[in-house]
Length: 161
Length: 374
Image (cartoon, rainbow over all chains, first blue to last red):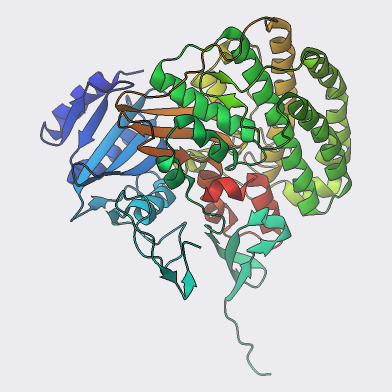
């Protein structure tokens, strides 16, 4: 079992300080900000390293931080054998919301990423099948963005009925 | 003789189909009787409760919404939400409340598993076990009804406490049930579990190997059915589960391969026995006196920050990721639904199986579409 600070030290040595940054000020648990271009390598390393052994992606959520005009992806990962967990975040700008997909690392990310795309509008590069999952394919806008306005008509039906 | 034309056929199973347990559409690509691919299409019940909760001006008002996610195990949904919020607010919950919550959560687990195994028998063509299961589930719902007036959607577990106290004869009722129920499990086993036809339909069908289950982050009976010894009640303890003795049930491949439909089914049956053990101990230890509303906050105004809390519901790991911006309404509530994640493994385990087995595979995952679509 490793503490997030120890895991951070390992990651910093392997990937460099500019790729990961730890935030200790969080109330519940420390979390790390990961540079989007490094997320796939870092998660793959976390999964394959014998001491870290993160085999379980608990949750992947998309968040809209309206104040900063950014979108975030939060990864909650866990190891069922080593029993430690970790929180990673990727922050991207609203204008260019591209994050590499980690579907190749944990298959469960497939549907989670589709949901984050559907609800918040984050593009996951390299995802094999990035379609809307909960809303219809031809729905407009991303419902969980803070500035979302429901479309007036959907296929001739009035939406806010 | 003219040459026969062969091509793959695409069939839509659902959205209105008795064995999809709601409105789920599975696009089946068939090569004769063999399934080449099964693509689930979800979202027919989507109402975006996450968006609704952002417009609530009180964290307590989200609870009726989370009830309606997994509507056959609403108590477990509420418990998860309450625990997440209590962690965020650093609320210490009274002893008596913890015991009542555990008893209700475990009763809910039994009720939900009874529905799961009853309807699973129904999917495969066994009608009688369904009636037996519903007869016993009714007794649990009666206990819920006498406590909070509702049979399915309770709004009972609140952040910091409970909406009101249990009735005076509560312990008696629970003890009656604990005595009544174990012999009935034998009845289900005789009727369904060890029935030759049932075993033929479920053993060696829809095999989910343990590495695949972990990679797809399956949880609950689906993960344990694949032989992975993982239960959040023990491995990431919450509430007071560390005070009770119980076993974590895993699939062993008794009738076929580890991780087949029968294994997922038997895990549910045996978990009911373990839940009875927990309830038995909890009823004995539960204090008689104590205000269940003592720790309920008048106004909830958490500091800026976020929390991820997960609990073991009947269907698996239910996680709540809640972000607060310091105001009265939540900034973001995300529910990591166990059914949503478990369903995503469906294509992986149904490729190569017979089309008739798809019903058995979907039933063994035990999905509730209200929670898949949220």
